[in-house]
Image 1 (cartoon, rainbow, N blue to C red):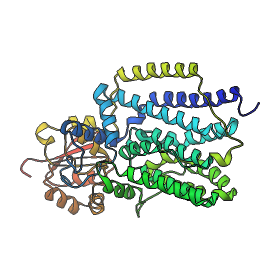
Image 2: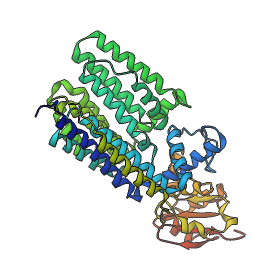
Image 3: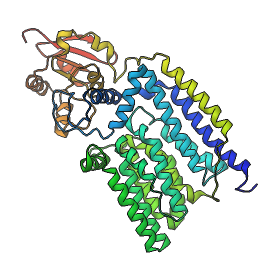
Image 4: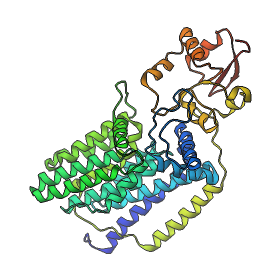
Amino acid sequence: MTPGSSSLRFDQGLAALLAAAIALGAAVMTPRVIQDGELYWHIAAGRWMIENYAVLRIDPFSYTFTGHPWHTQGWLSQLMLTGAYLATGFSAVIALVALMTSLAAGALAFELARFLKGIRLFGALALAFIVAAGAVSARPYLMALPFAILYAAGLVRARADERRPSYWLLALMLLWANLNTGFLIGLIITFALGLEAYLKQRDPAAGRDWLIFSSYALMISLVTPYGFDGLLHAVRVLLIPADGHVHSVLPLLLALPAGSVLFVKKKTLIRAALVVLLLVLAVYLPAQQLLFAAMVPLLSAEALSTGRFEPVLAWRPVAALVVIALVGLGARSVLRFDPPDSAVRPATALAHVPEAVLRTPVLNEPSFGGYLVSQDVHPFIDSRPIYAHAFRARFAGLGDAAALDRVTRRYHIRWTILAPENPAVKTLDGMAGWKRLYTGPNAVVHVKKEGS
């Protein structure tokens, strides 16, 4: 059977449909995708923007850092998540996550099918799915993923054809830059493949064409509400903290085989370097794991290829998948789902706090901050990167009674909501003027006694 036969093309196109269907089914049946504390402040940010007809530039939520600069580079993703939430609640958010996951999986499989077939195609997809599975979550990086895949795939195809990338890809970069800070990875890949084109083709014209396209991509990435500051913010997000620890070694499952093939083929050392960079980011920064799972197969597909193919999507399987997807997503959207209490959602604990106390300054667990924001409670701290390192370090040391007393007096704190294992919980139990109001598996609430 030749690579150009319709049967082979159909099989490869069917692989893309199967990947999309599997991803859709897995995500739509997994409420875990919304059990992330960051989702709450993403939705709160989107709601604020809708109500105020403006993009957030400063923090309006905490009482400790109110007015400090806050870059919501994923403002468009936040509007998408908020729109889904306002439609039918968390059920629609799950449906949105499932849709974007399905589109990303289908796009990745279809683009890989241009270079791979059979066991190589399914092996690459299987490894990508294993690495990505734990990182699928209702966050801006998932909203951007389908567009990121299509953008990177366009670059890879241009290199395989030894031509300049299509300028239509710049529209994808524009979307990516307004959906998530991961667009910086896209720019790095663009410049790296441009350098590869110049070195491999030994043609100054090729290098010039890629340099022009890369320059346009850089300029387009600045077309956001934050302009050049948005680019600088994206750089800061990718910096590994000095006290950073390994988040996951799972990306090695994909990086080792891909890197091995690229290193063996010495003419693809630039791509091997990109894989190493993406691996380091994925290992230390959880938010980069999903992008890593998509980019590495795309960058290594040509090196694994035994030929070039043109996958075709037959209309009947496509129509069947669309109908099934619409029914599934529609059902998921209308079936009510309320997340249970968890380490990021202390709903029961918060319900025990008297209304008169609820609106006074609180000392809270960082993981609870997003939920507090969603309940119109101004937190002391949350998971956003706006808080200074010294401030976070001060919070980490509140197991000491003297330090805890200084903080509660300085910020006029009237109540606390902390995780049971937080050392400050036992400290508060022994401090005069404080009493424990609620004890639960996920949160403990203390309030200051009257007159204290």
